Length: 71
Image 1 (cartoon, rainbow, N blue to C red):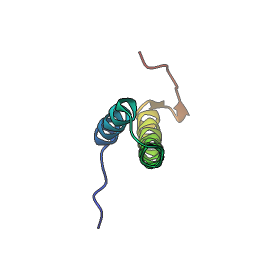
Image 2 (cartoon, rainbow, N blue to C red; image 1 turned 180 degrees about the horizontal axis):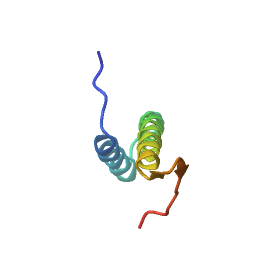
Image 3 (cartoon, one colour; image 1 turned 45 degrees about the horizontal axis):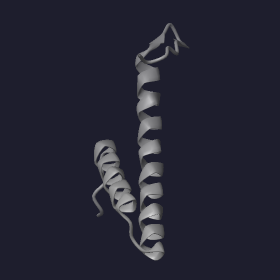
């Protein structure tokens, strides 16, 4: 079974990919790295959505969800 990265691991890997892209590489390699970063970004988005759902449940009061901006 493949290891599932944490949000923080995904962001760290995206940062590494950005550094590689900024340093320059050929087009094919750039496209592969870009695609990899986009997949990681998508996975990170899912993780954030799940976390948001958990926060909403915690904030639930009397059957009504109270949504507040995070500061």
